Image 1: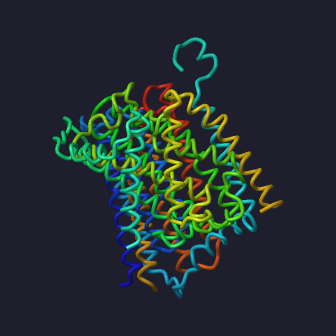
Image 2: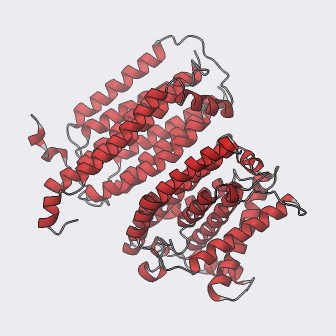
Length: 175
Length: 298
Length: 103
């Protein structure tokens, strides 16, 4: 049992526990922030796996993303404080079974498959960051640029879907 | 050992910021006031509002303090006085300071009060305005240093400080840092006159003391970040490195506090519009200009 | 075989399972999106574990994780766009009330 294994296990457990909390609490704010801390634990786990850049990036990006999630949760839910104990689930048994089957399947593959020899030494953090940059703007540039264009398109499309149509604007007072 | 020293320095810095803030606000220079006010706050009753979200209510001030301290951990005060010289230091400080937002959202939601909640959500809008203006100027700084190591960034400014090399980036970062520390005129989250202190409204006693301390530490961290990224860090003639760092940090803090005194509080919608329609194009222009400059004259 | 790789993969599997449960069982669009985020997070953990323990010298492994982060952001943007449109039209984003979308 190495230190690395301990950290991966610890933060992994934390991530899964917070992930479960997301669907067990009634307060929407707690639900969104539990997801945030689940992702943060994953970021810490990445740091444990010596992927420094990705770990820090994960911790940074998810904080903003999940905070924005939180405001949408509070906006769109009937009972954001969770004081009314509203029922928010359906097809519970099916979902439980599906989730359990998915977990068992993935876990069985993880345990039973022979992954071959494991490399124990990772490149140091500065080297990794440089390599990742060269990879992104070299061999994988097309993929990276496609991702960039896609996110721009999605932003524009989402805004276009979300804003009120002009004819509606002239007839109602809602903005 | 170094981290303990840094935390002590941050505490001393927070004390100085409190003195400066009072001096700039009232025109009275009193060195005992912050200490006395702090002790008085510790002695007061720490009220818990009705039906709070107890976890958030208790966590928020501590999380704010932790995030400010973590941000300071990657900033070098002298070549050796740095807790962890992370290979991704310039990114890590962003990651640490994003949790200011999380702490303020918690502080807004936790106490179950209308003013606090409005303050918390207002800060989310404020983040959307300033976040890119923190990250993009740092990108340009890292481009010049060709590294994300904060020590490397300071060393890269040996010939010419970044404030001269990329003044546009400095301006944007300075304003965005003020917005991040919710200093006036960007104190939308804790607006005294509109929201009765916003997110701080329901806090009292020990919790308020931690909150205030965290805020002062945050100002200190951001001033240190400005110094490291734009004002050449510890570099300077005659004086030893630590003295230069200290002097520059105090000067930047004073400039931030003073700038806020001269302007009325900005509106949320205006902040968002200026951040996205003026700030982000300028930040992109800054990246482009620095990119060209780095090629021509590093 | 290493204990670290197994631990990381088990975490990924558990997050995947929890995500599937959430995405199927919740009635609110935003909660369903949270489930999808967890599923993607599980995929991310697996990819990073494969990079770290099987091919640490290939930077493309890290790039896949970056792409997944992009996909998470995309999913949020599009999902919230749809949610706003739906909320404006019908006044709720409860999926039980959206049966007319079913073919």
